Image 1 (tube, one colour):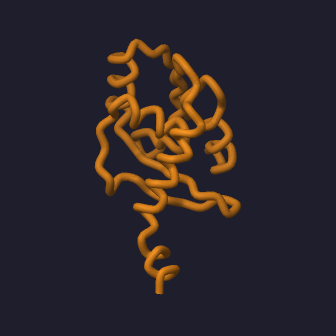
Image 2 (cartoon, rainbow, N blue to C red; image 1 turned 30 degrees about the horizontal axis):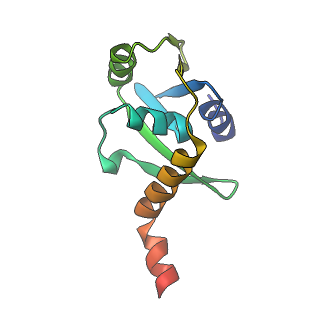
Length: 120
């Protein structure tokens, strides 16, 4: 089993996307999740989860493995699977500027309880 810090490191690795096998599906976070969202992976807003590791916000989402593989095949992306993860080669690196904007917007949206606390 991967620790959250290992997941963060692998999900942010330049040139690669990573999904981790959990509960019969896959869990994707951070830049890997952003890349999938940009490519059009279908998800519900309620599927996005916000977690904190070492004071940093982590955005997670779980998908059926089939949905991930279909999206990768549709986009002609080379991928590799083993018992613990699915990894794919990115055609180009994730834009750190667009990723940071997306992450801030999603974290703000998912963290509405803290917003109300800060504003009162």
